[in-house]
Length: 461
Image (cartoon, rainbow, N blue to C red; front, side):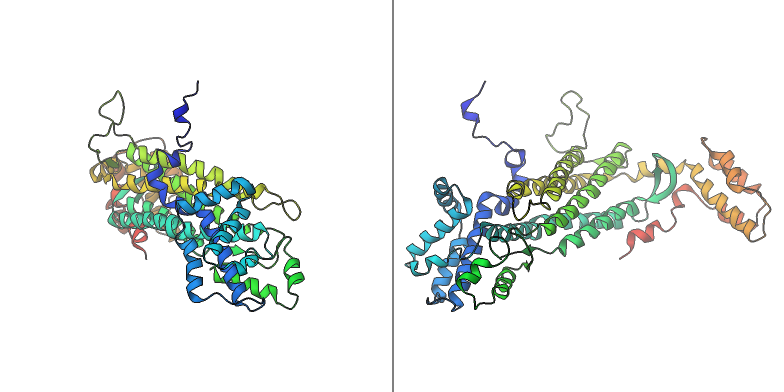
């Protein structure tokens, strides 16, 4: 059964339940955001042509240029509504933008230059530059700052806990101790590497006509160096010029970007699962949120929902970004429209990633390190010192200070699958045929200080 008054409700949780957490992306990835960019590209091309003196028209005055640029600088819901209304007739989004600008020229009494709107352009000339502009702005102004905020938070936590000894769990089993700070620093460094790639991403644009040949340009004005003019125009928008294309810019730069975003997502997904385990081990205490409910039946529970939510949203984001990565780099011959439909979902991929990052940021803010629990888990794990003992014996044998045969096997027999306490390990060490200096060094070791250079690694610049 349909309930008619519900059919206008948001279909996507990004536009409903989670709208407040991802709304900054809507400025760029919404239909209105894309149309604003299209208007900018069309108007800037119009101004460049009028100023070029290739055509027998007067250049726009500085006042008229300012008024034209206000069309995209002040683009609002009314502007979007006008374009949407025009598109009902044109059934073509870019043509609707062209007619919208023609109407603006008429209002400004500048119709003598109307035929220079969209001059020698195919729709993809406008679209590829518009997508590059909105993606670049969304990454640099919204997604990247949020990811960098998370990296900075991880760095702060890593340094605050750089010396806090913690039991490692390779394969889920007790292993050579580390520090909490070092483990957090691993994620911070992994993330930073991807963020550096994203920060230095190229954003390419083409502006060469219907099949990338400048044929219409040359037919109208054969004396003009259209490659140079197009390069100047594309670079004036803050993009890199791609001179060699079909009708479309091949989207390889987009694939590279989405790979890096997806890789960042996977690193942070790994962080979310590890923090989830640390919470379950009691290493982190969750701060109760006033009025919040963990379970509808078990009043005591505080569930790690921020990290679970992040996992799910990273996975959804990657499903979309991976699909875009594969779809966008293939176009039949000189053009097909698979990219047109696919690119309308770019914002969805970014939205789920941003939502996940926001959840991790909030989740980390709601955690408190339980140093007592971490130490209690480590202090009785004397078996992890078996590595140190057998390695010291190996060094002693190599230096001619001991004749012990196969020290690894000896320690394996003592500790594998067994729990040993401090007294039994010290008795074993004391009975070894090794130098007194080596014995003294081993006798001083405890699980909580057997962390190597972990503290130093956590503090590295």
